[in-house]
Image (cartoon, rainbow, N blue to C red):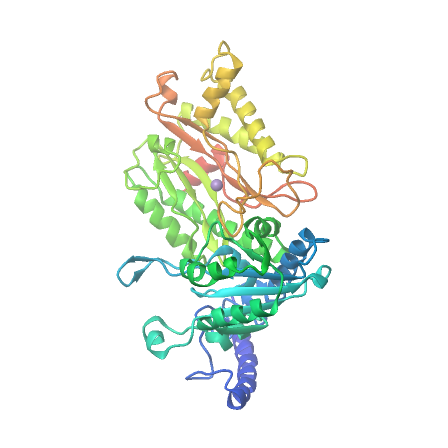
Length: 503
Ligand SMILES: [Mn+2]
């Protein structure tokens, strides 16, 4: 919490700031406003001092951080072209997302394109980021970053609220220049006229903005003067997979919010509750703690429905004696958390539930220990299958008489998904990064083994049928031991029973 005094301090600082700006406005008409404070489409230090500090583009991330990201991008790209003839000039094109509509005039919640957001922090639709670099910037990553953004339009702003406009976008993000988006074609026309050979960097296999793609970038791609067309997807992923200190701070916060919300949801659960109510409670508790929204439609699955891995219907009643599996996480200032817990709504595990639960938990804890530089996610997955096999043999769910290759098939049915994925701005983050590479410090991954035994699996003893369990934590890979970012979310069977008995 912030004291009244610190609020006053911030405001007095801001007022000084806006006094200077007022002068600027009169002189250059750089900044406008109907009051001292200019409103943007996204939080800014001026308008949302409770969220964002002076010098930050988005909460927790400074102008410098975004500049460094673009420098890293340029360095990596230029490195790939070191020694390649006539590739002095590099042009990177990153369109933003556009608004998607569910029906006439009714938009879906806007979510910015991740790569675009990573490179400039600008939260408006229908924008485009251009980065221009020269091969001489191999060491420094020096570049010019130019944003093209929605033009200010009083009539539209009357309905939808203010947009930042070109001047505002430059002030907000610290890019080198910003223009109205209707200028982008002219700008590029001028660029290609003046560059004989250049490397065009653009995600052409998955264009994120149809209009920019068809109207603007496809013209560039036809241009014979660009020498190489390079996809930006894996380049961006290779940068995003390593989290900076500021990013890790945000990820920890996102995970903390989800972990605390999970505790509240568990306590709120009871026999005969509807899955939709647990979903609503999770959404509420995350937002109450500052998250913008849930990072994905959560799985809230009572009883046998937990055996449908992507069950998101969440509209059934959870009966006494059943467990509920909830896979949920939130998005905080662009960073996702992704947790799963499974618990008995009655407050007490049955014997069979506890056996399967503890088996899953032991496997999960062993897999977490492997989140070090020594292993890849695929190696952890192989280990998970092996450990799961041992547990299920002990429980008699797999028979010792079954030949090993068949055992493996059964195991792949009992846990049909991988044990992990990378986590970051996207839930299934940096998807072009192979799970076959060794883990590296500052990567964040999930560890999420599961045991799923459908109600109609007659090969298994009746007490185990209709039980689906997954336990998922978010793990930071470090130079030494793995750090469990979600360690505060209870998962020992006894801890969960204690927590539920306190309802
Ligand atoms: Mn996950």
